[in-house]
Image (tube, rainbow, N blue to C red; front, side, top):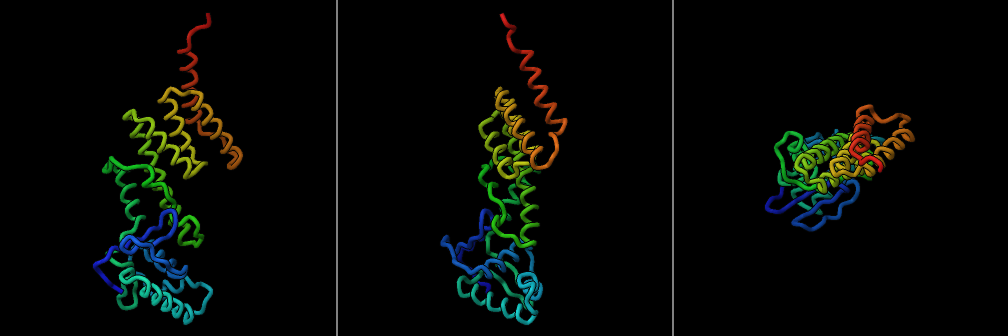
Length: 242
């Protein structure tokens, strides 16, 4: 299972897909789960561990047989996707994975090593329709990483005065987590930098309502102070009535 000389790409963001030389490969759900498990661990895994994780309620012998059958189906559809070494399996060394590329991009943004990228490169959640525990945990880890990177991108665009791109990044963050106060703060900061106090106040009201309805909490003093200071300055700068 270690074919070479072809292009293999695994997509895990916004849904599962495998592409072989640019063409999608149709794989049954069992095969998708094996591939996804190996991709998320990003290291060789023992066959017994894989079988136990994916066929939890199945006797060991039957789970091992299910894994063998699944591996055979994968090999029949596309060679080189997996590599077998004794009792262990791993993703093929030549397979590119969009999740890993997105992680490098996000960490580069947070470390100050990446300066040119687009919001849509970090727009997708990890396997959004999968509910296995091992997927849910990884999805939350990656979600936090990408939202932090989007907020950082928003800040950079505000500092540069590129407020259109800043708003795109802020809204992408908010779409990723509507109850994230820092995402609302990012949108408010863009509106204030644009001189749109009414839009900033509306965003604050939305944030306050969502936090009250879903979490039974109020916005933080820092956010309240941000919007309050802006309102005070707007009243101070307003022309006196004639």
